[in-house]
Structures are given as structure tokens and as C-alpha cells.
Length: 301
Image (cartoon, rainbow, N blue to C red; front, side):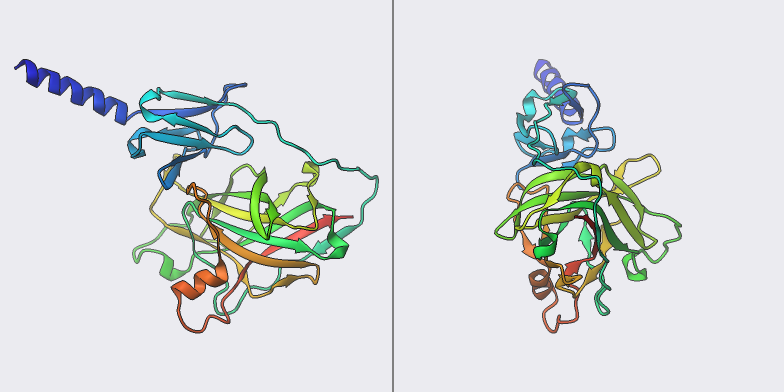
């Protein structure tokens, strides 16, 4: 009887620990941090809009917390309580000379590819366009980005589908580049909400961030966090969104571009070009498939 009682107590304690909700906070202002990346093994999850994630989804002895602008930390799961505080990390800012007048240079969104004008961006996937400038754009300030996301098509949805809106959370990120691949994140937007049953153009004004376009180029990405229900909880009912793609390799005769896929919740941070991804998944003639993310730019010179 005593052994049965001890076993029952152990199971109750184990269940309460493993079903525990953890909230991630800023250690300075005690504010909850939305959509924090929680990495474990070779995968991960996001916290929700209120910084909450559930320990039952973690299958390893430790996890890593990653959020732009904060120190990356690793924690043993057995040491977790109901709150987790992470410290802001100082960001190095490049020196920028501010002028009274600028000349605007607009690089319009290129036309989408006809046969495959969008790609399937699965939940927790990031699509990154590497843009290397021609001479005229080197060291210009970036004022604005506009990114096209196509609506889901009929075949993407269940047969009995009758909803008028499906809301998805995305983030726009910017990376420094080395050897034509992303290296370090230098900007991350607040999460944006889009209705994936409509065509969308997401516009981000970053003039006040004073981000210059160096000769090595920068990476501009859509990070797909997940869908949300009316209670703002992340859900898995739908699996992907459709960012617009183009066959164009040079935008406005001013930017050489190439687009990659990655998975931000994978510690390895490997990259594969969309062109190579298409060849692997759709063997045959892919020459009319879109190869690059559709992005428009406004630069200041």
C-alpha cells in the first residue's frame, strides 16, 4: 500500500511538472516577450503572444531560449519554474551620417512567376532573400520594404472550408551577409497579422532604424510563426502560407538576388536555395518556377 501511494505521488508530481506553463519575461522591465523561439534537440516551438510555452512539448533535458535583442540562454528543464527571465543584449549600431535631404530610389516589386508564383512556407519556416547592391545602391539607407504574400488557393484548404478569415503571424527580419549567406540578425519587426484568404502586401517602414545596404548585401526574410485562433493562441489547423515568387534574378537593374529557405527553430541553421528545393521536390522541368521572394524597396541616398 505504501509503495502504491509513493508511486501515485510520483506520478502526480511528474504530471504537474510536465504540464507546466512557462512565461518568458524581459529581466529589466518584467514584460512578457511574444513568440520567443524555444529550441530543443533539432527542433523547437514558439511561445505564444503572451510569452507562454508548455513544458509538455519539450522532449529533452535542456532547452535554449532565443529572441532577437536578448542574450541566448540554455536551461535544464528540471530547473524550470513558472517564469524565465532573459537579459537584453547590447546591439552594435553602425555610424550613420544623417542628411537634411535624401534622394529616394524605388525598386518596385517584380512580377510574379506565371506557373509557380508562390511557394509553400510551412509553419516555423523562414524564407530569406539575399540582395547584393549594384554600385548606385551601396551604403544607401533603407526606408521601406514591401513583401507580397499570395492568398491560399482552393487546393490548400479542406473540402468543407467556409471561413472568411484565417489569421497568421509573421515577422520580417534583416540579416548581415557573408559569402552570400545570412550571418547575424540586425532587425526583427513586431509580429504582423495577415488574413491568408486574401492577397497581402506587408509594408515595413524602417527609416528610423538607420540600416545601410553594404556592398556585401543584406538578407530580408519572412519568418512564419504560425496561425492563431480568436483567442490569440497559436494553432496548427493550417500548415502554410504562400509568399509570392518571381523568376527575376536582378531587381530594378540595381540588386542581384537569391532566395533561401531555413528553419529558425533548428539549431543547425542550414540554408537551401529555393531553386535547389524545387529541383529536389518537383523533379522535371522547373524553369518556369519562381526563384526569388517578391520584395519592393525604397532606398534613401
